[in-house]
Image (cartoon, rainbow, N blue to C red):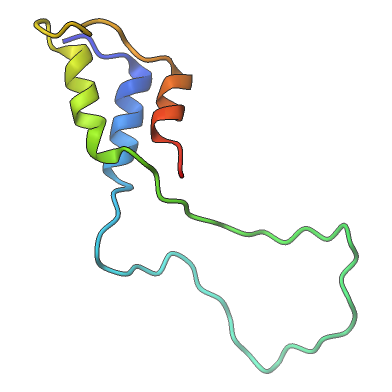
Length: 92
């Protein structure tokens, strides 16, 4: 089977990002009364923020991978471009 690197990487990355019903803590914050507000931050202050978005079409990834990998498929060998992969799995 011939699989493009981009499609394989996209599929493998989605395997690890499939949501589960369990809650997981991905980050923590320090809550302490030892902090004192001194002044307003300047407008150009950068605050690091992480946001996780749910991807779409994860359930179809294996189907699409098989379509381009199966010699009997009409889509055999029509490997996806990185842009197509990004668009297919883009968060809603």
